[in-house]
Amino acid sequence: MPAATSASREPEAEEGGLQVARAVRDARRGRNLSQRQLAGRMQVPRTYISKIENGKAMPTLSSLERLATALEVDMCNLLHDARNRQHDDAYAMLADPFLSEIAPLISKLDALQRSMFLNQVRDMAMGRRRTAVA
Image 1: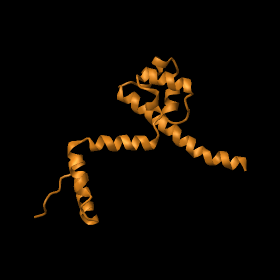
Image 2: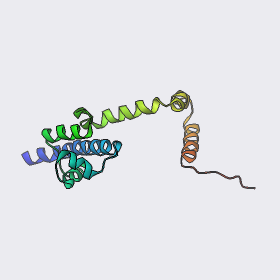
Image 3: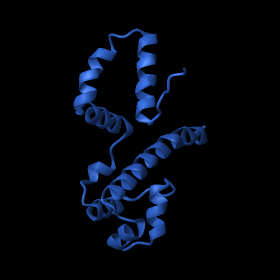
Image 4: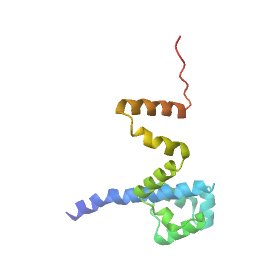
């Protein structure tokens, strides 16, 4: 029975690891650092950074502190969970003037209208041009 308990907790740890991995990768890329440069700042092998970013290694608290220092971020930024990231992403999107203007209007559309609208916006965002058939 204890094995089942630890097995059921494994996905949670894995999910948490992936969040740290994503946060480290995003912070590193946001600062235009290569894995090698970040590893140099931390005085660790580049492969260690790669393992962290791929979720194959979970940094210790000490390593997280060194990562945060090397990335010039608060350690809390590396520990945001998925829910906080989604909230931050949604807040950032609504800060966009265009999106904040259309958000209340979309809720007034019925399902078909909303689907048509979203498909049109998606096509425009992907750069597709619809041509009229003569």
